[in-house]
Image 1 (tube, rainbow, N blue to C red):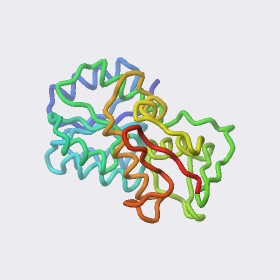
Image 2 (cartoon, rainbow, N blue to C red; image 1 turned 120 degrees about the vertical axis):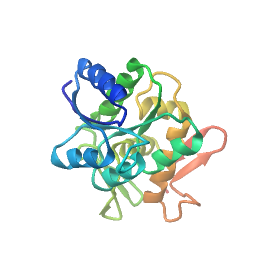
Image 3 (cartoon, rainbow, N blue to C red; image 1 turned 45 degrees about the horizontal axis):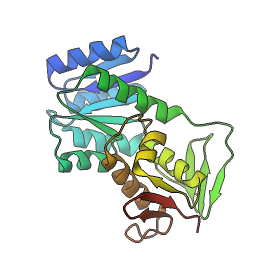
Image 4 (cartoon, rainbow, N blue to C red; image 1 turned 135 degrees about the vertical axis):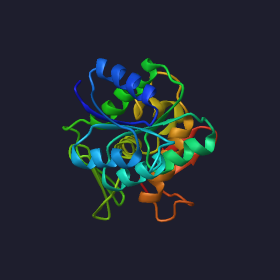
Length: 227
């Protein structure tokens, strides 16, 4: 693979074990022991993926995630010793694409990393531009515009919008979206879908609390209405 991966983790043993496993999986891994150094590395070289611990010294993972997302759509996976809903959702709301709870199996971390890279790049360049109401979605350029203004979307948010907009009126279950957007072949966490939809609504709806484009189908999932 040889994709460039930035791993920010303050626990030296976890950092070294994760670096070894990810390197053996084909990633070109750069490591940092704290949030400030992680941001320094990120701003000095291009990366295809960031794996970011939540509890970091100097700058915590949430702040690092916020700053990275403000300037880049690079996929971000959060590492956390906590599986509490609040901790997970905070990271996702700041723009993380996925999370892995510690302690983790190396095979799971590698699988999540590969899935994150695949979904960030797996768009058909030959697919035509989609026009849905006031939205224009260009798969080849990986760009979406609303009323002519380019939207600041993460890679996951773009793929979610594209997947929904391809089939207006179709109801997508959370499980189907996890497969199509997150490339999960197994049952994942539906919070990934719900938080990504919330973030996307904030960018494509006039009133995210009363969505007219991305509708909730209670008890099932979500539907795109072209208007």
